Image (cartoon, rainbow, N blue to C red):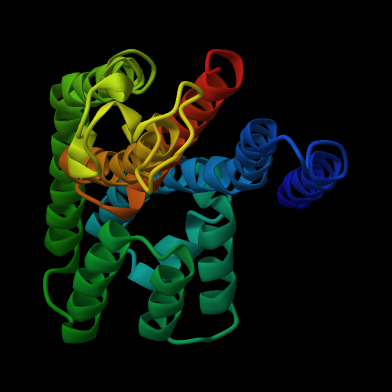
Length: 282
């Protein structure tokens, strides 16, 4: 998927430079599409990874509960893990089987659990495994520790779901506000600033009626409306980047998980702005 996106993006870029190198507006519009196609598989992969991590946390909760029940009957942790090898834990199956195989080969439980948590690379799992390892190494009331760990994971997942549900409105509001902002910028770019082109002393760059020519070209060292509106595109893209990161932090507690929102908003801003200049601009 990633290589397909890269190859498709390169093909579009080559096509763009071969046929539209003289048409600046079409050049930028197709470049935006190309970069969007290149980045899209990576963003999809990131979304799939986040979804997989969520599923792993849910399945690990089931694994911890089953292990707690097994240990409560007097079964050692090592034997309990081996007995659970054939149970279905969805996306967690490969990790559970590897853990059971390591213990079956004689690798110490503490070391096998450490490898287990490192392979999964989930914050929730790492914290739970750290507790289980300490309890197993200390030889205390392991079944109580496992049961408490399972309850803790359950509460964490419940709070995460409640947070996602409560903050869903923030995501919608963030997107709506951003697209309203794009609309305001486009109105300024195509309606307001061109109307002020004939006003003397526009923006402090000149004075008198000769500040702009009839065609909008700079005739006296001043800036044309088109040059004045060029930074709007950079403003929209920058706004999209940081709005997406803020949405991710507020709704999911992670700036990393806001990258997908940043990508959507940045590409949308670039394509809308450059497309408007191509199809609406004069």
